[in-house]
Length: 95
Image (cartoon, rainbow, N blue to C red; front, side):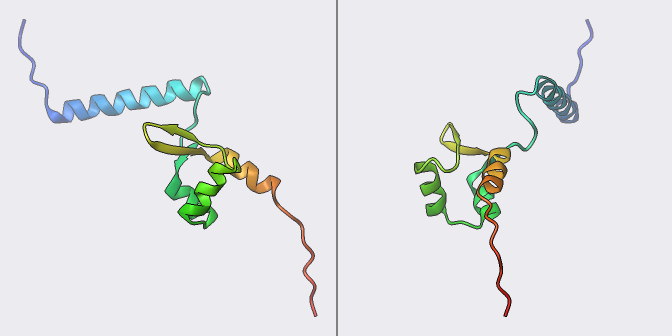
């Protein structure tokens, strides 16, 4: 059996193909959507809040979250739903 030489380019291509296939499987079974889960930094930027406010939202259960291996993730679709649900309609009085 002849020996095959595996290059770093071969490994990179294999990695990309595997990631693509995993992504397709996850999307197919609707277990997760791409970019659905975001980290605290993106949530703070999106809502323009401080780390303390975000922590209060977690403590008060205002925003649901998932913690895996010490990293906190938020479901972006749920954050958007909360924003819409808490929308208020105010009348602006013009002089």
